[in-house]
Length: 172
Image (cartoon, rainbow, N blue to C red; front, top):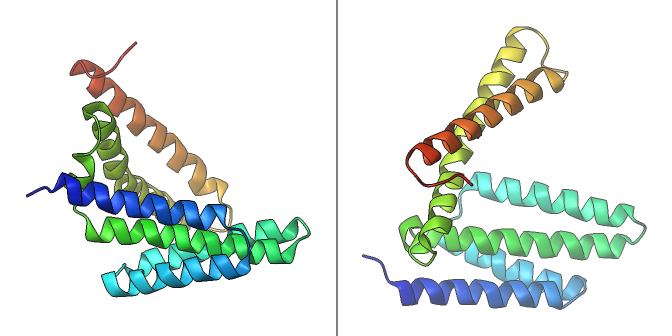
């Protein structure tokens, strides 16, 4: 059973939280936002892999920002990114995809579904090409698996586009 008002409310809370995190600068504000998001993620049971990805992404963004010459800005950016990613993960963990998609127009919903379904397929493609590179003894050179993975991803996108056009859902 979908509850559009409840789902819209969750999205509104996420939007307000995200705006607060982005618009209030500094380490203290970023730390407060990250603390709230971490607590919510702990309560809602966000998967371990999401935690790992969020932390890695936040560290990379923070390091990039700190590299620009302002280490405190890097820390603030990392905290902000961690807060935003975990807040989004909480929404996804607590809201069935159908409820989120019901709020979108049909074409945008279709695009979102296609994107969400493509992520596991892309991950499987990358895993398969990395395994093939490893079997050839070439795992140290990223080009040996990135290039085939990219080619296969583009081929899948073309095939998906052709299928949509064949069903009258795309084209110019």
